Length: 107
Image 1 (cartoon, rainbow, N blue to C red):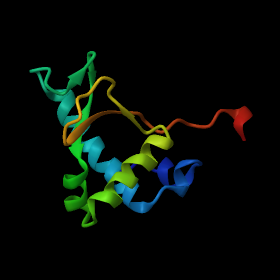
Image 2: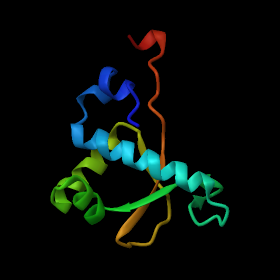
Image 3: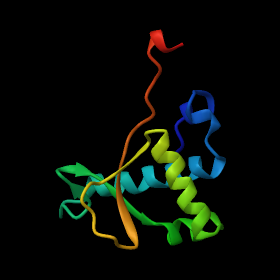
Image 4: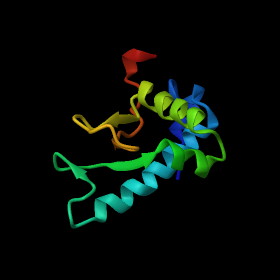
């Protein structure tokens, strides 16, 4: 499920539609990782997700390079945060952040 704030609030409203779909998919993976009792999907005790750019490209029917741009757009908005200290593997691990509501003084 994609949070409605991604459709209506800044800075998320300007995200490409495919980035919003990717974020919704990652949220689904996060729900699964939060249920994991082995600790495999946790980094520093915090649930995380892992998805390669190639897998994201197959999921969204786009090239790997475009998928990399979609990940980057989510990072710039603060919705994705790379897990620090990762080896250079194919799939990166990310913490997901929920959309942050605007503060009254930010209007």
